[in-house]
Length: 467
Figure 1: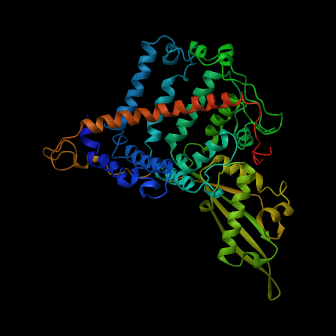
Figure 2: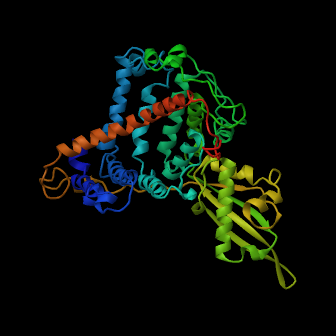
Figure 3: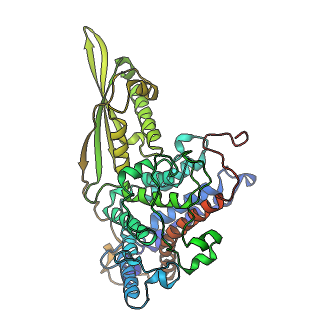
């Protein structure tokens, strides 16, 4: 009850309805602005999730309120698994064929989820802003939060805009997710490493991407209702219709495994918030970088070059700064040394920058083509330092009004009406967030499986008409 009575802000919950004004239901034929239904849905979703996962919604009170209620519910499910359900929750539901190994049960995962989605580091507003900007004008390539390709690039793009790597709770959740996922699908394997995750970031079907480990018969009796191929193997389909080494993957298991592995290695270790990476480039003509506009152009090309190397959008221009030190030849300016400083919370981005700026692997000719300036000396070896940000101060909770006479819902006026509505909203939205994660994975697998029945596939960059 303290979740609803002391923390939940009914007025702010009802403010979400302000999005549903007359213009929201208008289309162009009614004289409304030409806005797609997807954009309208994203705008509504932003208001809903920003409130829901805030200190005013279901995320206040880690020790005595809404967040405590969710973590305790997860813990009680663990007690249920241990004492009442033979083989655990998923085996009793026939989802799994066998009981997960110790430490890999459902409880080990779900107890880490609420502290992550309730972390103040996760920027729900930015997630929706980025995807709304893209949907408003999909023709602008820079608006797209991920590159074309397999599910791995989509996961990487989402992680980059969520800021989840600033949260130690989310780092723990992503590691628990992979441990749980791998624990129920494959025997012990060492193939998922940060190095291999980077190789598979652009496309899980790329020739340099290692094969994922072989699955066991891990799906329970529910597999009998999921199609002939799954029924026969009790595992995610592993066949592929793509040409060997083509980089095009229609393999649901391959995409699923490497997406989970990429999540595992996206963030730095717990205790490290970010990396600051510095590297120097010598530009042959100082006139190429003698104005702020030219420097900004160079930064943009540098970011594009790194993202193309990675095959995913792991950097933005906001993460990069550049300073210029000119060299003189007599009275005239000759070359200029450009110091790039990159601030990133992405472990794979750090690895990609180090790999790309390695002077032994990158030539001046390649850099001139990619960066658009004459280069006399390639990048120096990157210097990497770690940064640890202090945890964000606790946001003002609804418990600021606790103790006021007659104030049972925290609004300061003693009026406790309307608690039934926030109770329904809190339970439905909180539960839906957890279920959506599992449904999304299932949809990804089934979508890839349906693609395998197609007779052909147009490769990336090809014309759909002529390919």
